[in-house]
Length: 344
Image 1 (cartoon, one colour):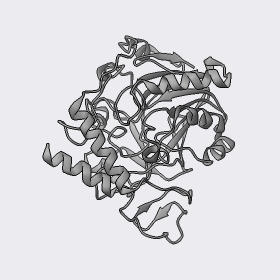
Image 2 (image 1 turned 180 degrees about the vertical axis):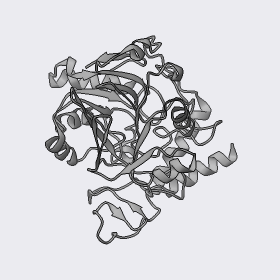
Image 3 (image 1 turned 90 degrees about the vertical axis):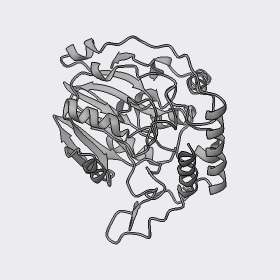
Image 4 (image 1 turned 30 degrees about the vertical axis):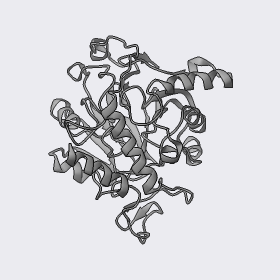
């Protein structure tokens, strides 16, 4: 317990302070000699003091009370997904993990089936809601998209399981291929922002978002972070990963939109002084969906891990209120239940 506390505190102080060096000659502006940066000159990580108070508060909350939630779930044994022969489906497993089926291709985003989002099996954010689909009930998975290296989005145990069971291709942002090789996974391609690959007929593009990366106190921003666009014959979707709001989403919409679905985070936004630059509120998620020219917003990154200071059940209620206040068509905003499958 003591070593875990030390790691957490050191990480809080290191985040945003570890230098990645100056510009890399001949490389895009977001590249640095020892890593990457967000292109927005106004981007600032929270101060060391704010980060330290936040982590201490989260640790204290974890000791004093175990987070609990009782969200409605949909029983899903995966049979309809395994029997699907070509319809477009989206299934929310929880947090930022979706199972997508498009043109006969099975895709998983940021797979996380573990009990904790942490490097430590005995400490760190613990699930408040079990996975909506058991790992054993997955349909065939051909492609895995990773947005960045934080533990709630890149889980070692899960990616090893999925590599063994399904042998998919992994598409990851720059810098992560070596990490995957280190755990024995080699069917990996790493992409820079705006690069794309064709996978079984799907056109997949790595996209700029505003976030940061780190798995230890010593590798802050050494690896890139990204969103993803997936375009098939019958549909198109945008997966935002983790991001703060910025003007760059309009460029994504202009170059690759419109999209049928935009999968965007609505949770982990409090306190603003800690989260504003790197996470989105429910209202900002609506703005992102509009900016990328998406027909529907699919809410994610809520109700699975207790990662911030807002009540764990607040994000969907706040999103519903924003939809009502803006007079939006409720069918354009999907707040899915864990385990729920929808056809799109």
